[in-house]
Amino acid sequence: MEVRLLDKNKEKTKVSFILKNSVPSFANAIRRTIMDEVPTLAVEDVEFRKNSSILYDEMIAHRLGLIPLNTDLKSYDLPEKCTCKGEGCAKCQLKMVLKAKGPTTVYASDLKINDPKIKPIYPQMPIVKLIKNQQVELEATAVLGQGRNHAKWSPGLVHYKYKPAIEVGKVDNANEVAAVCPLNIFEVKGGKLIVNKEKMLSCHLCGACHEKNPQVKINESETEFVFFIESWGQLNYKEMLTEAVKLFQSHLNEFIDIMKKK
Image (cartoon, rainbow, N blue to C red; front, side, top):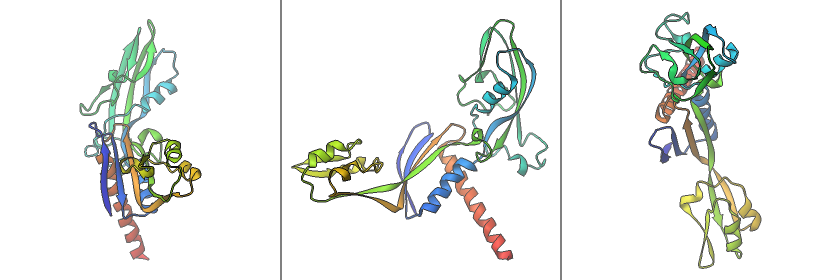
């Protein structure tokens, strides 16, 4: 198995790479593990002391739950795996307080969080708008969770596609084929249709070129996959991928132990 980096951004929230010498089942297992099992912090419980805003308690709680929080996987444990057995302690829970009085717009940055290392990824996310004399006072509890239980704990978006393989035969209408491609993957040189190798990986296999001329054949590699990972900000792409591999290996070890007992 081999991984070849294609592109990444400076913020470490987006990355694309090619996974070589693999199979679809493994590629999909990695995708699902990242989205469904890699844990992140999110607000789970909210206790309201005051709320005279236009929004119901449930709506404000829902908005709080969807605020992405940067996550330190070394400092916090999943409640079910914590030494307190999920009863609640500093290792599996994070407290935050919100007090605001109108007229004002309450933002994610107004949350007072006990752990100085944990902050909202997008501090300007609006929570509620208060007019004169309206108030909101609450205490929220954030815990680690997994995307398979609620989307608010999903660390990001992950998808992949089969690496496209394009074969060009004897094409007599090169200009027409090149023009029909929505991603401009083809070039015409000396009357010949040529595939731009730098753009080929962006091909989404629409088949427009093949419909224009059957001599252009589009195939999919069953052993190479183009991966795309986009983080919501709680973890960077390296942390997401590393943690997913650890979890996947843990599942395999558990499966092996079960089979040995039978």
